[in-house]
Structure formats: structure tokens, C-alpha cells
Image (cartoon, rainbow, N blue to C red):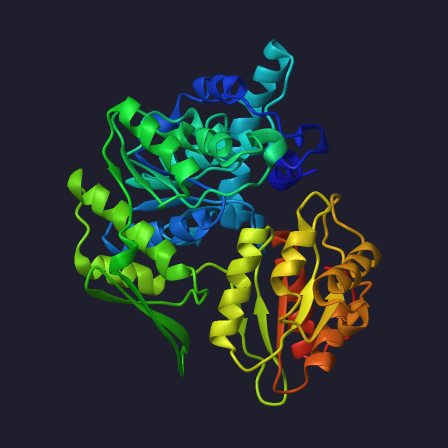
Length: 450
């Protein structure tokens, strides 16, 4: 039987998240330390770190550098987590590199009594592929936290970037902003530049203190120099306009929060410039304009006679608040119909509070994940939240769908031809929604839960 690298990496026996660096250090040591042949921008944070990574990789590619990008989770294809110059790792390269990593991972397991985890394997595969590809620089997204995340096996990056910090994964990272910030700031090391989102004071104090202790320069975007413009609907698709520090930019990422994420990436590029990397103003503009990030307030027009669909991976209260603001700005006169599927361990009551007053109706569906909240429970939560928030559970039209195909069809009927349907709640749902939407748009029959 031919070796399946994705099945191997996703083997249930090493799916458990076990924070710590000993296993991945030993694994990479046996592999010849591929990370030592690379230079990095390391990005941590709760919200916006993926978009910031995509902007930075696009800027560096536009500047002429061979650029690696490591992100998680994937939306549609496993291979999209590892990219070089905007291209996913090929199936052949993934198989070859994973076979190489497996040999050393099994040696670690036999000697240490503990097999590397799924994310540690993924990190090792990515670093080896980037080294073999001769990348000039790699934009490396933290998986969970920062201090003990397997990506933190690298030495001092060129720039450590801290995106917006919020309360998420509190069982592992701590129940206060200061505690979470301490974990995120664990990627800061002596000899790096540090660029941070202007955090809430409790978190900002921690980031600033860590940067000082490492002797690193800390840069924070100047929000007073950020001017957000309107979304312009063009023949080749909508773009959002904005200006930062007097320079005009356009981005295809339409969320109202994206200019701020772009400004964070621009400041990180500025830090690279100060370290000798050649990044022109034109590369900045081109990189911001060309950046693509599916599943983050992604607007998918369906043509005349059909509603517009928005697909968003927002899965915590902060992300849902930003989604609500974006919907009100981009579609100010429309009450969207929501398709919502969430994981049971998320703060979904607070997420519902952010969007309940906006929605014309809700269709609950179960994401394809073992931790998914059943649609029947979510539908009840929608009604209860409606009672608490609006004083009338009957004011909230709440429906259940057994499959994503059914959810898309039901939501489209409820929205009508000129309406808007917004699917959100979990990144794990994005691909399922998009596949069901493609079948519905093409007139194919409903087939599966995606």
C-alpha cells in the first residue's frame, strides 16, 4: 500500500495536544536541524494572526524573496498549510518529506517513549520542506499559545509579531489576558525585533516587559495614522481601501478589521527593512493588494436571482464581533440569514449575542469535528439567547439542518434572491459550506455533510 502522508500525520494516536518542546527538539535534531538553514518572522496572537501572516508572506514575495508560509488549520486542502511563494506543497513533496520525518519520529518514540504529536510532525515537515526549497525567509504562524508551541523550537526570528490577544484556549493558556499574553510573548527572544498589536493594557504591559527583558525594540502600529475607506465593488471583485501613515492601499480581504491587520504586517515589514531586508513601498502595496485568505469574511456572489454568501471562520466572541461590524458596514441595509456551526468548547452564547439582533433567521448545523455542538442544542441556545437578549424567543427564527447541503438550501430560501447568507462559527465548517454552495450553485443534488 502506498504511504499516505496525511493519514500518517493525522493518526489518532498522536492527535492529543501536549504542549512542550522536548519531543520536537529531539526530532529536529535527528533531522539535521533544518530550522538553522532558515530565517523567520514568527507570528502569535489570538485573532488576526493568520491574516497578518498572509499579508507578510505576500509582501515578501512581492519584494522578490523566496518565501515560505506555515499556517493552520487548513480550510480546503491539507497541503495549503505549507506554501512556498504562494504555492501549496505538492503531493509528491509532502509524501517524500513526511517519509523522512517519520523515520526520525519513530526513532524518537522508541527512545523517549512518546511519539511526536500531529502538530509537531506538521511543523517538522514544514521546516524540512522550506529548507529543501531554499526559502530566503519563512512566515511561521504559532499553532497554540507561543511559549510551548512546537514552532517555538526556532532560534531568535528576524521579527516576532504579536497579533491581537484575547481569551481563548483558557484551560491551556490561562484565564486572564496577562496569562495569555505571557504565553504568546514566549516567542520573543533576544536579538529579534518585536511588533505588537496595541493590546489592552493588561496584555500590553506583559509584551512590553518581555521585549525589554530581551533587549528588543518594540514597535506598535499608530492607529491614529490608519484611515479605513469604503469597499469598492469592481468587475474583478470587491476591494477594501485604506490609508496608513499617508500611503494608500487596497486589499481583497474585506473584513472591517483587515486594514488594522495589514497595518500590523506593514510595521513588521518596516522592522525587516531596519534589519537590512529590501522591501520597497511598491512591494508593500502589491503585497497587500495580492494577499488572499479564504474563509475570512469571504464574499461569494452567486449571480442574479440568488443571494450573496459570506463565509467566515469566526469562532470566538472577538471574531464574531468583528464579523458583525463587517456585515453592518458592507451590507448596511440587509438582515442576513446565518448558517452557524460551532464547537462545544467555544463560548457560543457570547458569539450568539454578537449577531442575534442582526439576523433575519438562523440555520444551525453540526461542523465536521468530534468536538462539534449538535445542531439541536445550538438551535435551542439560539432561542434561549433570543429570549434573554430580545425578550422574545419567537422573535428569532431558528432552524436545524442535518447536512451542509440542507443548510445552504434552507438559508438561501430564507434570504431570498436579493438577500445575504453568512456562514460562520468554526473554521472547520468553511470547506463544508463552500462545497455545499458549489453543488447548490451548480444545481447538483445534495449529497453529504461535507
